[in-house]
Image (cartoon, rainbow, N blue to C red; front, side, top):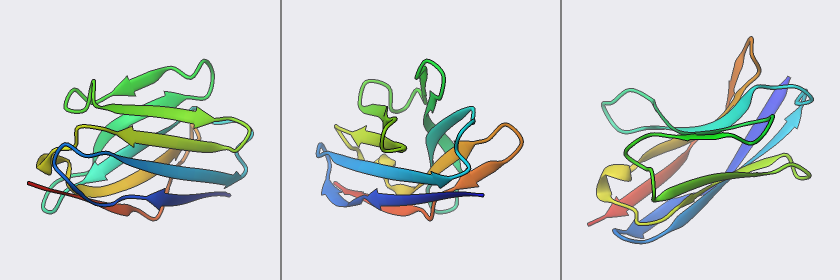
Length: 116
């Protein structure tokens, strides 16, 4: 089993910054990647950014490139999402994800609200 515990998020004005954290525990000795997804009201969940376990290769949605940065602390089994230049359209519930090849695990979700 894998547990993902998220922290961070909240309310910020447009142009501001927030950082999300996701601490992983359990059977995490071998996995493909970790990442962040988001879901706005009435919309489908969408990929924001991922980082691979091997090589820490990153991948970003076009809508966040240049503004968001995903990183990981291997010793702490934690992945971060630094969000700068936030826009009202970034408002959503953000979910941490761990891709274990055969199964996907999700964090509890955290609300990010960007006011204009």
